[in-house]
Image (cartoon, rainbow, N blue to C red; front, side, top):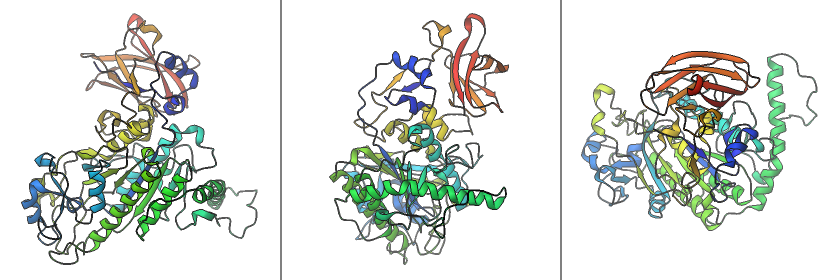
Length: 546
């Protein structure tokens, strides 16, 4: 029998996204643990645009001979002045990694216990189109469907449910730097204008010229495509101006406590550190660096590791090392975790042009003072890469959404319901809370340790006994999943009532893989009562329709 976890936080009302009066009765019976102040915690995402070559970033030492045969001209040598950096001799043989020689900053962070490498990250049915895979990562989907929503992003959906009281504040919940294209990931399902893109702007005097000649916006919007675009521009202008003062004030008030290299990514992270130092309360920051689509000149010559990839990794490594040092020296590091991600990896075999073509998996690097140093997963199995599958490594050890779900819950404190709203595995109807990655966050910083209590569903008809069903996601959209908490339940009868007591759906379903699926499309948003079973065997769950 398995019971689900319920986050115990002082801000549980906003964290769960449910009605305050529904939570009050639950929270009365829970001893709130002293979880410390997590109100200033932030997530920093570093997008390596183009598809980073994971095999040259983190060389699998236990399979080095096969690696070298697949990459005779661009391999990272295992000896000499330009050899890889041995990460950690204490790791198991199948976790022995050689870092690219440019990643000296990552090695330093690892030795400080502030870097974790997540091996073989990807998603089911990898799409190797830059545009499609980028959108998949932004929206929280995979290659099988767009059921998580193709018009909204996981960051937006997360922020609008976890920080609903801050949606109308004068600071943006999300800040984007480094790319002129507005990131789809910040677009909420319900709330727009949750973030601001300050790429190319001077944060000390942030302003917008979207309104054109400086006159007042029109009071009448035509009912046409032009009118729709005009309304969008006016809305963006208002949002930008609303956020301008908070960004400028934070930048002016903030400082940097260390020296950064003179490059683009360093400038971006330097700005993020200064905004955090200045008290900007934004929750998610996104920075980016392009150029990782290394089809050619990844190395500058046969056997010479210098070249395009070396330059990129040097910039990433030095910028992130300086960023972490900056925050730690200002006593801000306990509240910030960052990670790198790329839309896909590269093939195991080089392409003959001193480069590599599009692949499926790539490592993620999670960094920051709250991070537990180490390696999650094992080295990729290079025997998978043959001419029959175009030299692809196909085994995904960690879904990218599982990594993010772990950070959203264990570091930021999001409930199961909030995580499921951000992204849910529609390919197998499972929550990514069930596949969280252990040991990413130190126990001293983890909300999951000591701040989560196991409680049963709140069902007045159960008279203190635990129920037979766990219902998720909650909030839901068009489908409810009933997961059996005891064995050998063949099926379930159900009735769904709106909060006025009117029956809106009923039926009988068989249990498949320990789960009953109930499709309830077309319902209005609001609170509903789900009755499972009949007579003395029935139990009641309160669910919220988005």
